[in-house]
Structure formats: structure tokens, C-alpha cells
Image 1 (cartoon, rainbow, N blue to C red):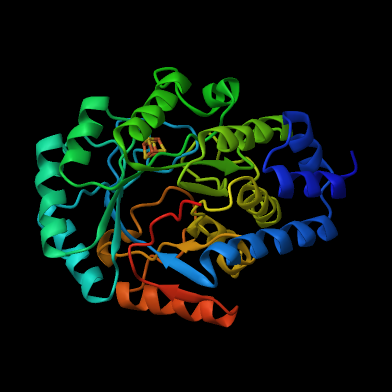
Image 2 (image 1 turned 180 degrees about the horizontal axis):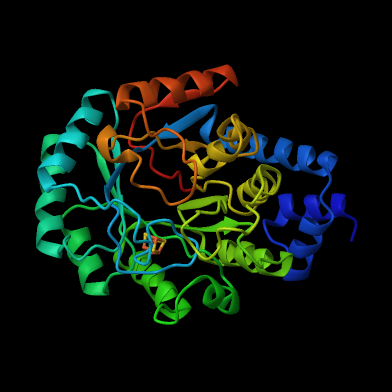
Length: 348
Ligand code: SF4
């Protein structure tokens, strides 16, 4: 089937076969990408208009028990300057963000055993009471179903857990043997069943990744129907085994953002910091390809440089207000409007 026909089919049916997804990726051209982005933006505007949702990102700890091969804060990186924020510091970041208008906070960190269920439950309750009407999103990795349930019962609304790749063989190539694809999928299923708004996501251009594997990611999104989907280019970190591997591209990431918008029109799609890291206008290009979320940083400036998942990460020097102002200006420059309400997914 010619690629133009594949785009028609995708727009109408929100679905392609695995072979068709791979063929669409392999046959992409600048013209095809433009057509895909045009349709993706049309679909997104029919649901969200020109609104871009903001989430205030608080990077609570760069301590992690895991050793993912692509990650700059993996436990084997001995040169990483480690930090963890206290509950009081996290609450202060949320309060500062609330005063700036943020109504969604994303608590993100490595898998750090310091953050027990009781500690997090009290923290979530305090954030909810100090910041009325806000949504709390957690991005703290793999935990037990019981833990996810306790955090949900304490008031957490959303959970982000990138699946990284929907191909078990590729998953094994990106992770140490003690981590398993099955457990990652178990976590995502548990989160969904408990009632969270769930975000998955994957890296674009991870070492060894093929179009067939990306097709599996797209099929997973088609069947799992996540509320959010974070995709960003792989960016190598100098203290990982993948230090010499080529990074992912803005071009392929944006192409896939458009495809995902057409697969699942209401999905919340961030234009990621990684996209902004590999190109000065990466986030704007992401929005123009179909994304509709940006995540300014609310972490204390003193620790931002230490949350280095990949090399040359941007936005490590600005205060929270500057970060928000910068993104607002960037969105306005391309005709979009940052809105600061909770930004729940619209179910259509
Ligand atoms: S990707 Fe996440 S789980 Fe893996 S080492 Fe990095 S912070 Fe830890």
C-alpha cells in the first residue's frame, strides 16, 4: 500500500497492521511528515484547540537501585552527584508552583527506597491540601500493586511509567537481567486497573532499535490506549555503556508524535525536554507535529544539573518562574496558548 494510502487508513481507522506501521516509518519523506503533522494537528485542535497543558516537574531524587543501560543516573555511574529532596522541600516546590498557577505536579525520581509508601502518602495528602484542586502525578518507577493502590488511595491521580519498548528482546538489550519486560507490563496493567490516569512511553532511536520494534510500540499504544504517552529521542550519556551510540532524531520523533496522535486522538502527548535538548526548537516542532503538553521544571535550581538522565540536558539554570515564562513565550511564538488548569485527558 502506498504511504499516502496508509495515512488515509490510519486517519480513518486509528489502526494499522504491524507491517503497515513499519512500512510507514520506512517510507517517510519530508512531504509525508508534513501531511501526517497536518492531520495530527487538525485532530488535536478539534479536541484541545490551541491549548498546551503544563505540568510542573519536580525531580525528587536521582538515587536509583536500577542500572538501565541508557540512563545517566543508573546506579553504576559513580561520578553522579546524588541528591534526594526531603518531603518539606518537595512540598515547597509544589507551593511555589501553585503560586505561579500550576495545577499539576509531576513527582519524578529514580527507584529510591527512601520514598516509602507511608512517606509518600503523607506527602501526597499535604500537597493536595496545600494546593487545592491540583492533580498529583507520580513517576517513580516499578512498585508493587499494593504500593500503587496505597498511593492512589492517598490521592495520587496519575502515574507515568514508560514501557521504553514493547519488544521483549529489545527490552532485554536496554536493561540489566534483573529487570523484566513482564514486570513492566504488570505495573502498567495494575495502574490502569487501580484507576490511575496512566502514561506509558518509549525512546526513539535507542541503540539497535528497528522499525519493526517501533511498530510494536505503536501497536501497544493502539491496544493499551494510555491517557498519556511520553516519547523522546534517545540521547546518550557519557557515563553509560551507550555513550558512543548515535542519538535519536527530532525528525523521527516528530513523525511518531503525529502517528500516535492519529492512533489515539485524545492522548496527552508531551513535547519533551529531550526533544528541546537535541534541537533549539525541538519542543515547538513537537507541538507542531501533534503534541500538546510541556513540562517546565520546578525542582530547586541547586539540584537540577544533577538530574542528568542524558548529556547536555537543558533548563537546568532557570528559576521556576523563568522556566514557565520561557515555555509560554515559545508556545505563543507558534500560535499556541499555555493553560494551567489540571489538564485532564478528554475522553471522547
Ligand atoms: S531509567 Fe529510571 S529506573 Fe532506570 S536507572 Fe534511570 S532512573 Fe533508574
